[in-house]
Length: 288
Image (cartoon, rainbow, N blue to C red; front, side):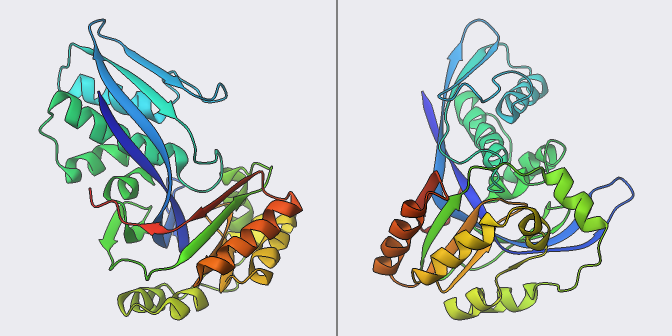
């Protein structure tokens, strides 16, 4: 049996600089893995089939799941006759702006590579993955990354400065498509300082990182769901240096320079009932 961890991501910075003719948005983002993860297990079967199971019955286990798609893609490419049984223990919040589906797809590339001893490189994985989802190449590489293009142009950055991160998802689901449609209908008033963020990370300046936390999608989602601002305020009242929404939302994270402050804010947010899914975490670099 092969076991893989699939780590969630947050966006320290997210800018949208244009839109391609095919509808994909051109982005500049700083992506960071956090120590919140799903667990995938892989075993061969002699049926020649993909059998996917999950610990939550709301998760599709057919060809609509990225894990299934990756397994099918690799089985066809490498003419694999054996089947594979995959079980997903889902912990990352669903529809949360944390790349939960994409990171599971990335883990499937690694799980299949190890299970069947496939001669596939990270670069080849990324080339195949971008056709399935723009976030999957980042999830394959992991760590602290500058992500450009539609998300597939990746530049590794030094590890994020040590800190503590509180992650909370309110009990709402946000349509990414709706957020980007709304964004397209407005003029972006402020663009994040992505280059300055890269410099702050490079110099190990946590304060500089927090000062530049910014997400152009946040005003769109926040305008419809005021709970996002309430969660951010609670985290900052509890001691977060800064708090911000990740991705298209609705998940919010706060960065802390002290573990006691993290625990205090956790208790505040937990008591509020705003976030049924709430995690104390740290940045990680999986070093695949």
